[in-house]
Structure formats: structure tokens, C-alpha cells
Length: 154
Image (cartoon, rainbow, N blue to C red; front, side, top):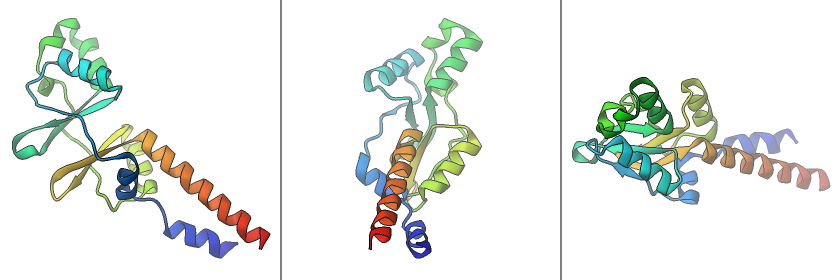
């Protein structure tokens, strides 16, 4: 049994495999879009975050539902006419395709955020949400359980 568990740990899901499963599509906006426009984009796409793209298609920031709530709570509804660059998070935590589910869980828990852009060669390559991480981890646990059952049955 121990050998099966050890083998499973070395086969932890990584960001690249999660993106291959869910897709690499990312909703992006320019820094000059209004908060109201970006709120509509979040609603239309049923997502919780957009990546703000700056010069040379590089990540300039991330704008989330939390950023929207924070801006409206501190400045009132009038803030909705301002540019997203005034309310976005600029200190964006990023991940790489090689990182594992466990590494992402640790990063997201420590930073208390739910969306992480994926960078490859300095460019946006996808986005991972906490929901993606949970789904991947559940698949890992189910696979491990199946291996354990097969080992016990043999």
C-alpha cells in the first residue's frame, strides 16, 4: 500500500494538465475600461475575475469581484465610471505550468485569493481558479482511492 501512495504523490496534477482539461481561455480587459463595463463582463461571462492587460500583452493587474466591492464600498456608486486601472490589484501573484495542485493550494490559501494567472515566457497562458484546484484535487483523491482498492483486491 505504501508504494501505491508514494507513486501517487509523485504524479500530482500540475497547472499544465489542469489547463489542458479546462482550456486556456482567459477574459482580459484593457486598463481604460470603466468599472461598470468590467462588472458587466464579469456578469456576462459568469466569472469572478478578469486579467488586465497592459503594454506588449503583459499582465498589468487582475480585477476581481472583491476589488469591485471594495471600490464601491469605499467611494460609492460614482466609482463605476472610473477606469479599472484605479481599482485593480497590481501585485498579481502568478503561477507556472509546472506548479502542482498542492503548491497552488498553499499559495492561494496563504494569499487569500481565488484566481491565479498562469504565465509562460512572460505572457498570459491561462488562469486557474480555486474551483479548478478543488476539482483537480478531488480527481487526485479519487484516483488514489481507486488504486488502493485495486491493490487491496489483488
